[in-house]
Image (cartoon, rainbow, N blue to C red):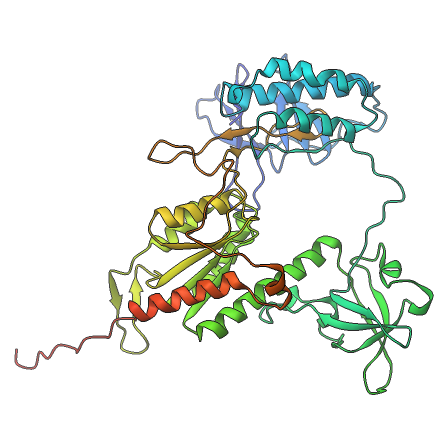
Length: 494
């Protein structure tokens, strides 16, 4: 990639194998009788040749280096270009106009429909551009860009990032990973510690970590030596404390001796993930209880690289169950639907019968039971593609509510001058019947089941209950047990 050359050398970018690999610049001396590619610069961000082809500019990390193009290989990156005294005069008004026009152009040039859904795109630019003169900061500009891009009536068009203002008084809240309630003593009682899969102790609440030993019903009396009677809520004393050691004074029930423990609170994203993990773990427990050990459960939060890890972690332990619930609710999308669907399409066409142990299938880890998919209004993008593909490929039924409705896919690589982004939905999706799929409507489940507020308040999951009941009916009607090993042949008479 990025092939450039001089009279004597060819330069190109190479990517070594491995997940953690970084690109490197290679140089091939074509003037040599025995040309051999050598590493010119490793672990780089980018590179370029000068106009006269005598020097190469290498960016590594946040530093830039200028080296002779025909110099040593690998090049000695010793003295970075000094950037500390560089400064630029930027007219915000002028830059905002440029960003607005560039966003409009990128949508014009990359939107999947050249006809722009029938919208007069030049008129749209002229409609909103006068408002740019009234912009006071970058967030105002983002709102105008959102209105402009929204005229296309397409999802997967995101206006985000950019040179947004961040005030010096920005405060990051922190969480102890539990629900707290005011106690009569003036402290705060631990009403409920969020629970996660005990097989993964690194995902547990800060209050459940080894050595902390805090339980539901314990009362937190002080944080870092400050009594909780002096504040309205413990969150006031936890601000900016995420990832830092915090000293808690704890009063266990029944007048047991007070003690002090050190914990590390979570940032908002970590706290959200913890609550999500409890929801996921309790869904699995409910499936085990309702399905009486015959039905497995796999939840996928997204369809990125994490989904492959989640699938391997949660599917393979239950691949030989009679039934399987694949929970795509809240799935944020990605691009792994084909890979996961291909796992489900594997069929066992014979079984291995070892002398010791249970028979197992070939294809290995092929699921032979009945499966359903759960989706809801928060199932998005590739989560929707998976749900629709699951049904179209005849793998089972879809339960839940209609999904988000975004199926014009995007490529988030077109950045604006201030590191902002206005993405273009670039690739529409249509079926073999010649109709556009999912976009603007979503995936309609085969069986509509909603989790109403009353049942959810009672702790029930009607969607999951319906899916398990359906699987139990299918299993009773059409069981798929592991075939019995046939009698071994008697060849004594040969």
